[in-house]
Length: 215
Image (cartoon, rainbow, N blue to C red):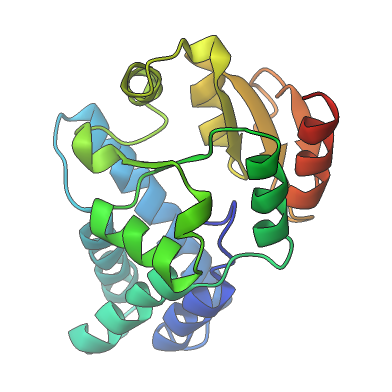
């Protein structure tokens, strides 16, 4: 969901403002959030993704001598769950739904967060299932998360198409045997040392057209 379907620029901007208007620090915060979710996974720990986001902000701010109000930080991070989907997402989901694809959200966000993300964009009727790594105890891109998802859906990994705008997510899905599709949004890049995804597009609408044409 995050950055694949959801445009979280507004949330990032809110964090940036709390970090003295420094975009580099905002980018560092986001990178640390992903990094420490992996630290949790590698050390057999698990914390809510929102808590990791807050802890990463705290680390970033303190390392650069920036004071902050905790409630302001929490409010900025919550904006992620209120973010709007990219303009072409809804019509793309409708097309895929009409083509009889099963649409499943699979995210590192908590169950509560993903429900907020879906409801705030009024796409509940387009999503068949929502799976959070909260139910697994590991964050993506651990291979176990992708295997769990396939088992939960009662399908084989190779019968799944993982769609993401993150190279690390694509790499994890490939390692588990899933087919993959990368949406770049003209800003995200693949990991050069990983295998290439099956499909590469710029926007969701392109992917929907490709998938509907092969149905």
